[in-house]
Amino acid sequence: MSLRRFLPDNFTLCLIASVITASLLPCRGGAAVAFDGLTNLAIALLFFLHGAKLSREAVIAGVTNWRLHLTVLASTFVLFPLLGLLLKPLLLPLVTPALYVGILFLCTLPSTVQSSIAFTSIARGNVPAAVCSASASSLIGIVVTPLLTGLMVQAHGQGGLSWHSVGAIVLQLFVPFVAGQIAQRWIGGWVQRHRPLIGLVDQGSILLVVYTAFSAAVLQGLWKQLPLPVLGGLLIVNAVLLAIALLATRYGSRALGFDREDEITIVFCGSKKSLASGIPIANLLFPAPMLGMIVLPIMLFHQMQLMTCAVLARRYARRAEARREVANGQTVIAER
Image (cartoon, rainbow, N blue to C red):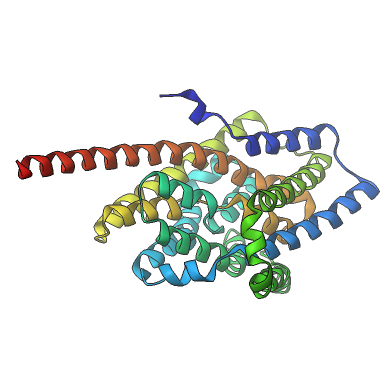
């Protein structure tokens, strides 16, 4: 087994570089104001392009498999939040209260789009259903994630978020997205032809948010509040959440009678959390001094889910090839 599959990708290395830069050279004063303005513009552009990129035809084509989509959404927006709350006695002793709020936020995030579809394809799963489920999750998350976060933070006893701010956040994210959907008829083809450029905007906006978030957190003494044992505890918490989600989606889909291809789609769409949606939403939802602690869990979870799902996808693919070879052998014998 090659060690390269366990190494971080280039984007993860850029995230680490952003955190290191913010730790050594945090932006402050006028530079911080300028970066905040640039970040807000980048986030608006990000959601506008997501709206222009999302194919309504793909969603309509896969929407008939409603049992699968409901199962994925239940895992994303019901199972994960329940785990975050019910496992509080186990999780809270391992991390700080601020990091636990970040974990609760992680539990409310939508599924990823690109990587969920990619892993489903590698594993020989139901790709059209993955496109529909992941896209629907991303869209629904614009509204549901801020609302769930407000409810869960209140349940945690942190005073909660004002519904006015939640509504403003939904408006800031949803309006650019709808504008992108409206403009899709004119620019949708251009967006599809320039996916690498769109990817640069996608990743660039996230790196901007990470830099500004960690700059503010470092100025507030982030690393003094985050000793190595707490960081180790956060890794354990993320591993526990991911393991439970993977097991629940795998065996739950089997118990519900889904076939192998649909099981693969449920596993890879229902266990993932979106860094691309999470960091912009966190930037709009939480005050700057909290952002470093809030986004750290999703940054670590992002890399953990990529490495784990890469291994699982290849394992599913090998089993599919083995089944195909057995089936072909049986066909040859029958013909003889």
